[in-house]
Length: 203
Image (cartoon, rainbow, N blue to C red; front, side, top):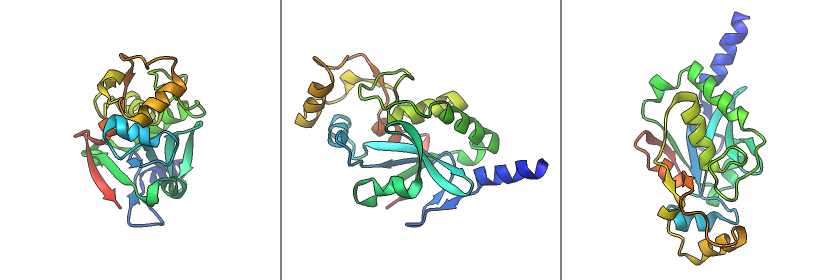
């Protein structure tokens, strides 16, 4: 039993080499790319950021997986996740104090919080509830609930630039009028900009 526990801890803590490059994946890493989804351009324009999708890395049985909110919330092999981004490019940010904070027990708590949201449908309306979940909301809530760490500043929809035609087109698709201005949201851009993180890989 003790041996099995030690092996499990090694799987959680050990880095996994990303087959397409030099990225040494570690549990708890936060990964960003420019999605090729239908809403990617709208997200980029509204948030003034090239990054429109993100997820969280976990190592399971020696394989690097990305916990992400798509349709539905699920684990995706890292190589598959990377291929879905524009040009296969991605950026990885990690807690500045990951070496001290992301212990085996902490990673287990992150995993448990992530698994609790598996299967939730994607939230096209960016509402602050667990009924549906979008990508940055998933990662923000997992870190906050598991470790009490808030990565990136929460905003309201009114703080984004909704003027671009791509943004307005998505608004017309999803709301009868304008989206609720006071809805609390977290964007990939806000999480990327957090001073709690440091970039550890970029291609």
